[in-house]
Amino acid sequence: MPTPNDHPTRRVHVEINGQAVVRDVECRKHLTDFLREDCGLKGSHLGCEHGVCGACTVRVDGQIVRGCLVLAAQADGCRIETVETETPSPRLKALQDAFIEHNALQCGYCTPGMLMAALDLVERRPHAGREEVRAWISGNYCRCTGYHAIVDAVCAVLAQQQAGRFSDAALLEAAK
Amino acid sequence: MKSSAFDYVRAESPQHALALLAQHGDDARILAGGQTLLASLNLRLSQPTLLIDIGGLAGWRGIALQGAVLRIGALTRHVEVEESPLVALHAPLLAQAAPHIAHRAIRNMGTVGGSLAYADPAAEWPACVLALDATLVIHGAAGERRVAAADFFQGLYTTALQEGELLAAVEMPLLQPGERHAFAELSRRHGDYAVAGLAARARWDGHTLHGLRLAFLSLGDRPLRARAAEALLQAGPLDDSRIAAADAALRAELQPFADLTHSAAAKTQMAATLMRRAVRTLCT
Image (cartoon, rainbow over all chains, first blue to last red; front, side, top):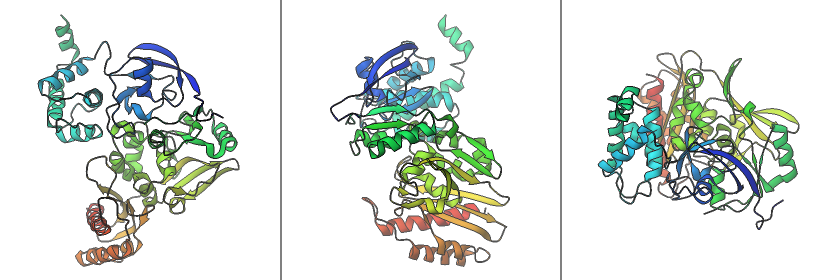
């Protein structure tokens, strides 16, 4: 058995933003430290590191999770999406633009987690109202904005989506 | 903070998990969804040397009708209960309660069995399974045994699970004709721990409540039935005087713990409010 001075490791195979990654990683290392320290992806932030603040929100196999409450070893075999994907989805790009337009960030520390939670909402709950947006992002703390601007930004993207901005035809047109 | 070092093993079967547990005893911890365990490891409230990850045991995950019960595997995620058509049809109390559990990102990982085995008195599932008179299915080296929810929760973070045993599933009786469920809780923000919460079920015949069960969370060292109030509320046709009598009985029988921000008196008042709201839901 390991003593506190031993640091058992485990080989982990994951797909991160479409790229296959294989690393030996300390068993105790959580997914956010793995992404930041072992993979050089600094977009996911650590605030509280015990599951309260949401700054570390990423997607594992298509579901948002707390990166600080998932071990890298647990994610072995999984598909991981972070905010710094090289090919942001049209919805993620629209959220980033809307956050800037609505002043939905000041220091920006919560923004990556906020964007990933919002992206999940926009994809899963296309008809969400303001109250549902608030409930959905209640797990993501922001100490600067007071949330109103963030809710405004997310609602703006929901409205764009309802107006057909992300339909196949609209995306094809935009790509021209 | 970072957790101290530990080794990590993925259990390949329940037998494998039980064998590892027998070998390593209290040096090991079972990892299900990890939404409580990994937070407490990061805070170094616990420093095991081995995590036994049972998250991949597919046979213990999922929701299915089995005869007269709805069986929910211990490794079923909260979000799977929240979105299950079977749960909505046969145990709507659980569908009502699920959105109150923390936040979406946590409900995606956290498991029903993890929450029940941890037995936090502020958690939603323990009160729900008590209100529904569910049965917990426990696996150990000697085989399988079943424990009623009323006997499972024995105190603060304390259950009928013995050393070397694992919770495999929970079985709910199916919703009967005329039976209604109500879940509500009061918290400072959405997703916070409840200051007080109530899981309730009853059959309503248009005049009188029958088989009423009121299970409160966040008021004591375990989920608590309010038996005096239950008895008064279903002693005859429901009217304002009966509700008033039950209210007085409830305030007398509850002995809630105060917490950092709420006195026992405030919690009692909230419990009484929740009971009135639940009764209204059950009979309309």
